[in-house]
Image 1 (cartoon, rainbow, N blue to C red):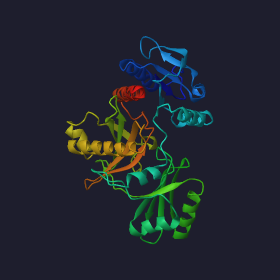
Image 2 (cartoon, one colour):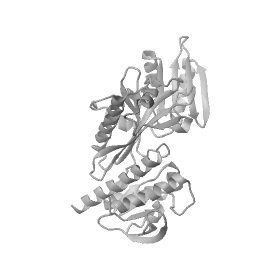
Image 3 (cartoon, helix red, strand yellow):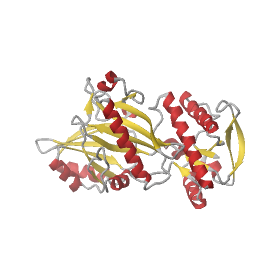
Image 4 (cartoon, rainbow, N blue to C red):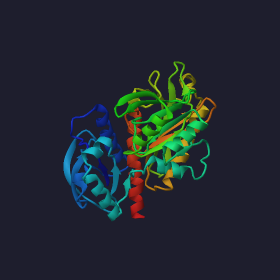
Length: 365
């Protein structure tokens, strides 16, 4: 049985894309011959018996309420996104503890801070690319040391997504510093300051939120001068092996320092573009580059899996520099599906059900 934990009911009026996700998951569960129940953290807290929704004979078209019982083949898919976590901030942590206590397979696990992940990933080199130089213990002194060696550094929250509260700092020739942020506390920040004021800013920034400092990676640009990077969405399949679900080119808004879709960027699927040379060239890559970045992303995912065995979904942000180097400079254990095409959403849910079947079978071994 595949129990999907989410803050949304399949009966609730919602967007076409969310309906597609529910329908695709139901169809995939039927394909892999695994029963599907959708429920919330609060409803699942009882574990032994819990209410939820199951699909009708036509997968995903109609849903009915049902009380289900846990069994030896039960696997839980954690589909809690940011808004869901806010809505269930009391019951969700209790559910995680209860599931861990009973050793019920649950994927995708909540990953630790990005600073912890960088420390794990940089212990040994990963073939095919690099991770940016990253300082996980941010102090004004260490940030200024980096700026004395290079002209630009990024300060990033160790928890966060969508480009929120990321600050770019440039060292100016006159001994001053320029700060730029496009989603800093919900506002645009563009400010010049001296070293003393910068020290105060960094102290204030890190008082209530943990940050890491990261070297600047020079991204490629489109003909229009927009910065471009790539989101590679990888998942484990019914064999337990990793595969690439989607490769998405992301271009920043005009004049933007970010490429995030929610920061005004644009997206274009490259998943089936290996032979579309014109399209690939518009983003500064070749078919060989596309294959290379996908393989690099898969190696990073396998490395993280060695530390988090039930990791099954990962979104990796890959930068391709003008010098031809590949960098993974961000990752997300809850990659958003809003940048995926409809076909990619269907494939995403197929992998969810397939990996759940894999885990379910392993429970019986």
